[in-house]
Image (cartoon, rainbow, N blue to C red; front, side):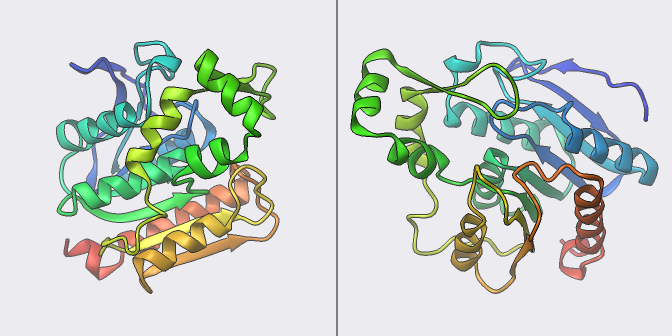
Amino acid sequence: MPPISFTAAPSHLAYDQQPGTSPGVLFLCGYKSDMLGSKATALADWAANTRRQFTRFDYRGHGQSSGNFTDFVLSDWLNDALYVLDQVTTGPQIVIGSSMGGWLMLHLALLRPTRVAGLIGIAAAPDFTAELLWDQLPAPLQDKMRREGVFHEPSPYGPEPTPFTYRLVEDGYQHLLLTRDHLPIACPVHLLHGMLDTDVPYQFSERVAAKIGPHAVVDLIPDGDHRLSRPEDIARLLAIIHDMINNPSVLCF
């Protein structure tokens, strides 16, 4: 794998782009994750070996990018993703979204249908700020979150609790997708989801697919968790990318 060269974009985003063939692959991380995570790193290695254009980046407040995490909301991170798609990548892109990145990838397909050639979701979490956060908090904790502006949830992935701001919840309502009757996304869509996911129920992927149409495929992994970072999960992801790249509707995009 070539050395990573981080570049500060005008919007203070750190990103890494590996040149290569088209269609390119754009990876969107999850909430409080970054582009040095295991899935992003595995994809970078694959792209280098196959000479495929590959782009990954950190949202503001994440990883190598500037800003304090709790100062930003989904609108900011969607703007970051749009900036990278518009200004950093070239040609059609297969967009891979992990967890919150799966929410953002759907918006990219809706906002930039001429640039997004395919979508691959990994435990996609659209509307999580409403359905999985706010709606799950008892009224006393909702009141406390309104007063204090933030709620800290114990994290299964490390000793530090995960912060969720009230601003994030409010902003999330502007971007809800599962409340819509239909998602007019015409490109190929493949949604990977572990059935043992305790963070985002696999039914979320089924609901997304139902709103897109029959060309959206749901791929359930019976023993898979939320992260889907095991070697067999990565191998499955790479096989899906290979199949999508060789899909005539993508190649002719």
